[in-house]
Length: 252
Image 1 (spheres, one colour):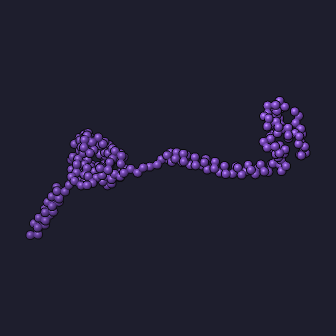
Image 2: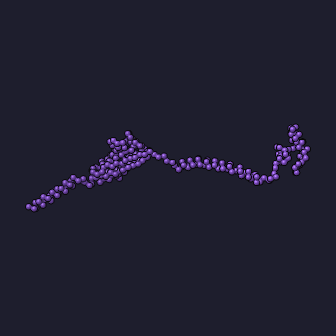
Image 3: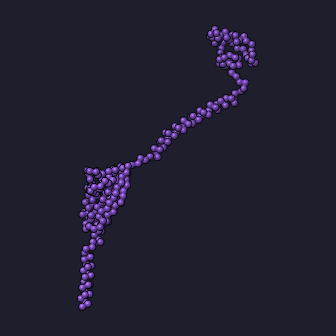
């Protein structure tokens, strides 16, 4: 009585293992798709949306890649690129003319690039890869794109130009003002230091206002061209006795 029971239990174990093997997914029929969880970019940048996959089967003409987009505000996803032997980028709509296929399926790459990113592109991008007979595993992966306004940057050349046209004129003007404040005082001090205390002009020596050394060099013929008032003043001056030592009569 014990032998039939043992045979029945062994048979049940074999049947259970058989059903488990049939129902469990085959480890050789799986695919894994990977994308970065987040991508950040500035407005106007060209953004690379990476997507890589691993498959137990070699990619064939039956392999397909689909890229879809869901806006940040919500709503149903929208497929905008399909790959099957070749890429079919969008020609119209939100991404029309701004999507380029960058993938190499033979190397497990299904990446794309988004040209001239805008703030309206914020949202979730989904990459889906199918490579029959690999039908199990993680066939999709998501990437959240965040586009921010571009921050204006100042180049070193711009700073150098501003410094040249602002600081240089200011420095020159400052030096000129300092020079004008210092030079007059220096000239007065030098004139007082080099001038003799008995040095006087010839006009002041004889008490003749306006009489300068230039007039001493006047010729006799020039005296006849003087006015009557000037001639009278000159004759009256000659009649005066010399009051200062070193006075000499005119040679005319």
